[in-house]
Image (tube, rainbow, N blue to C red; front, side, top):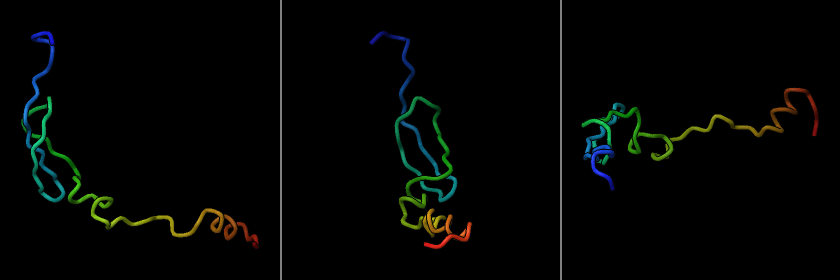
Length: 69
């Protein structure tokens, strides 16, 4: 690699603003990174995900336009 053309790669502290969890990773950004959600509080990873669509698309369409099966 050429000297002086690559950014410095540092260890940084990542802080979640939702749950307050902290962990360390590598980055070319500044010293501290703040994220909105992390794997500790994200609904997909915690299993508390809510599904917005309860009925299927076909049933919703049939009900909306008064069609019978």
